[in-house]
Image (cartoon, rainbow, N blue to C red; front, side, top):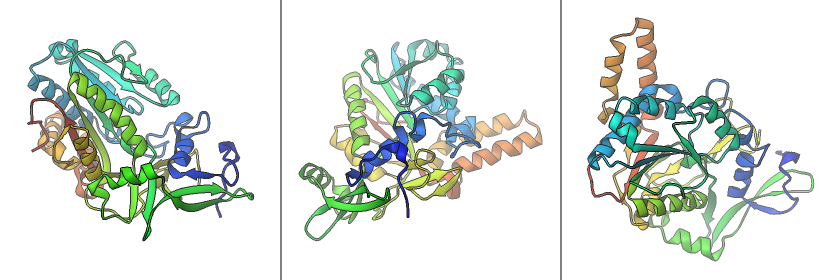
Amino acid sequence: MIFAPRLFEFKKNKLIPIDEFVEKALYKPDIGYYTKKIPFGKRGDFITAPTISNLFSEIISIWVISTWEKLGKPKNFNIVELGPGDGTLVKVLLNVFKKFPSFYNAKKLFLFEKSKFLTKLQRENIDNTEVKWIKNFNNIKKGPVIFFGNEFFDAISIKQFKRSKKSLLEKYYTIRDDNEIFEIFKKASVNDKKMINSFKTLKNLNFIEFPKNGFDELKKIIKKISILKGCILLVDYGYLKENNQSTLQSVFKHKKNFLLKNLGKSDITYHVNFSLLSEFFLKNKLKVKKTVTQREFLNRMGIKLRAEILSKKMKFRDQSDLYSRLQRLIDPGQMGHLFKIILAYNLKINKYPGFK
């Protein structure tokens, strides 16, 4: 029996779509997960690639610089990190960028962050004079733009549906008079049914996870890319083959947590459907490179060679730590295969480092 925390103020007997429910649990001011708690690191609930090893962030910075060079080294160049976490990746990016003066002088670096709490944390960790925090993309006006997000998309709430013989049903939660949470399926709206039926990727699925809110965010990004030219590089955990079940998951203190427990204290995410994401980008007139695993991308970008160079100046203990962290990033049984990388773009160049 699971009870709704009183703080969330869900109205009794009202049907709440699962995306709205999760959105409140994550972002409701003062009580949502991302509004009051540092989620990263040993004291938090999960660890991300940038906090595992600076090697990951260095590779991303080199990818950005290489793309800038392929574009002919434009004098105005924009980089937007989507959901910068605690700012670890940005700090490494800036350190690498400074080693390339012509690029450093051309770039403008923006941080797109929804959480006021995390924005404050980032401001404490990053030199404020070198970056600009934004809530929308209106101030990005000149030059090509690269959007980058590491575990950005999985943190945006999703809708869930299942097919019956005659209709499409959407998943809701409801709070009964005794404050207990129940799961209910209700006939989906005509618009949602039409939208889902427009994607070939979802055609044969009986259980569907649809990132409506995530796609709304991406439409704003695509609009900016269509005006200025550019690309979006997303790194996240997810799958390519058909999946017919819920991937919603809750993490609390680095362990899987029952979804409806510890609301406001635990992270709630899902596994990204990269085939659906690719189809969405194509529908919106962007070109898409074939999705690659994190292992493939980092190996093609030379992460092992970078580790070898760094290790030559290290003591044995530090070398062991370096390679242990590297293995976590690229090992097939850890992050290597689970995490995938997708690139969508409207630039004239078709060859990008890390992709075939």
